Length: 111
Image (cartoon, rainbow, N blue to C red; front, side, top):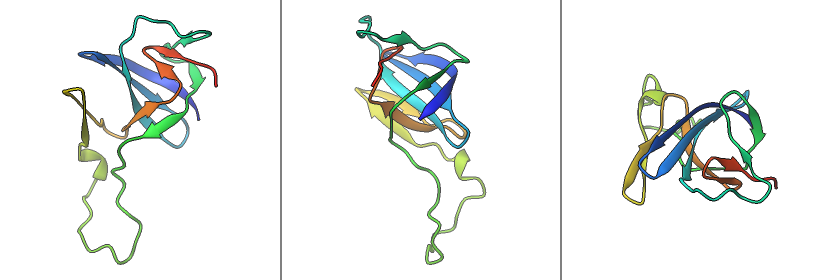
């Protein structure tokens, strides 16, 4: 997907990179690395990049008429968290957690 970087943050040994395209929003979790990948481009806020995403969370309730559990008023208010080597990182508003196959540290590699 081609997505725009909207925010770059860090939590302990990880970068958390919020990206969005016209349909989806993700918080990419990338382990901090001082190594620049060969032909890598440093991610910057406001710029768009091709990022191959592996989605880790999905808070969207199923669209099934047989779904009997009550749906929350706003499913985006429910946080989903994952542990990355004892570092807990959670979803944020409309951003689902993900990793990226072609992001190393703050660099995106061409595929």
